[in-house]
Amino acid sequence: MKKIKKSDTGHEELFCNTAPSGKYSKAVRTKRVYVDEKWCLGCRLCEYHCAHANSSEKDMVRALKDRTIRPRIHIESDEHISFAVSCRHCDEPICVKSCIAGAISKLNGIVRIDKNKCVGCLTCVLVCPYAAIAPSEDGPMQKCELCTQSRTGTPACVMGCPNQAILFEEVTG
Amino acid sequence: MKYVIIGNSTAAVGCIEGIRSVDNKGEIAVISSEQHHTYSRPLISYLLQGKTDLERMKYRDNNFYEKNACTLLLSQTATKINSSVRSVQLSEGEAVPYDRLLIATGSVPLIPPTPGQGTVKKQFTFLSLDDADALKKATGPDSRVLIIGAGLIGLKCAEGLHGRVKSIKVVDMADRILPSILDPEGSTLVQRHLEKEGILFYLSDTVSEYSGNTAALKSGVEIGFDVLVTAVGVRPNVSLAQNAGIEIRRGILTDSTGRTNLDGIYAAGDCCESHDISSDENRVLALLPNAYLQGECAGVNMAGGEKVFDNAIPMNAIGFWGLHIQSAGTYTGDVYRENTKQEYKLLYTKDGVLKGFIRIGKELSATGIYTALIRNRTPLDSIDFELICKKPQFMAFAAEKRREMFGITPGEEEGYLL
Image (tube, rainbow over all chains, first blue to last red; front, side):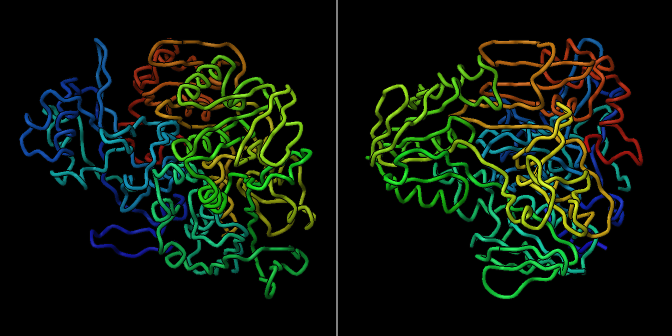
């Protein structure tokens, strides 16, 4: 038995920076962002919605116009296909285990970065197999935190996708 | 179950979190010769630089030990392991009994014997918070600093001190800087960048004698200095283990579960030897991620769980004044080379897999895709190698692989790396 307690959100809160090792942990039901590339139009609206949600501006145009956006989800595309890529909130998060500052932790199924602790060494960029972590405008690293810290509160990329190519689904882990 | 951990850094924290993922009842005692709450050791240079502080550089929250029900024995040094009666003797006080013991004693700095070393008043190594504190106190705007060693520790120390001191000179017996992570051309590139910041290098040279505030180099050059930092390297801190009859090679020898040859005794972190799968050789991988992964693995197994850590590779991310260096694996085989204004990049392939890479640039992204190719030993004929040479990208993978990674595949959501 691992040490757990019920948190306010109804998720189980761990007492460490990492998720427990799968086999010995109780199943934690976690919602994650999934993508289906056959429906992706490559319109990049998810990137814009993400950048907007994580800005302090209510108005999308004012938030994004004439700025280099730094979305936490990004689109890869060529002339034939396109697809969105974002954090998987891994059960065995290598970023959490590798962070030299102890700035990355996993709580309630969400891998988060404490920007106050991050020193920008890029070890997380070196280890994340999903290319999900990148520097923010002001230096420290940033990543998808499922909009728990954003203005929208629920994943803006999912809500903003016009073709339902990005889903927010619960899968038993 | 009584767990005892000797050491309080990355491997120890990994071990605590590993134990608690299986067992929330057993007692955990943590023995540390340092007086501090667990802190991020690689952040001591950022502390000098003012980019972090004592509070922010704590490796885990203030309530970490309490939440994980650990008894913390700070400023206490383990002097002997009595494996026959399963206890650890402390320098002061009674012996601490254990059922499962983790040795996470880290490494100690190497100081090559040099004539006249004893005449140097202000001399330091650069491995601990106390080292950084002492160095901070000993330096001021007029200090001329001499650093012996142009490796990761020496150069991070140089960056940390830059701006607080008058001058920084670095001496190394190797003919280039950062030889453990860079190729010769990459070394030159980074050296030029550091020289622009005013760091002076004396390479292929060594100190033949110290005399108070002067170092006489083999080449005949004399360097006057006020503060000396010796950063020529580290060696695994194995004396405690060795005296207990634990098998030592380059470091403490463990199996892939973290066990040593003695019953109930595990080891993790910089004091251990690892099996590097990129070179298929046993080496000491004194790297933070490696220490955590070894510690966590040992912790799970100490608590009766089952876990193996069998895909260690060397990997490093380090930066100096905005220039980032990322590297992993072994530099062997065929080379793909790219040298543009944005990035210097080398990819090494052999036997149909990526063996290693070096990237140097101001903006490096998505490097973990390369690192995962090495750790997973992904056959290069299963991806579009030409595309991935240009930049790390998922477009180079088969659609099915991408679906597995980013689409919904119930029961496979553990992530594919570990």
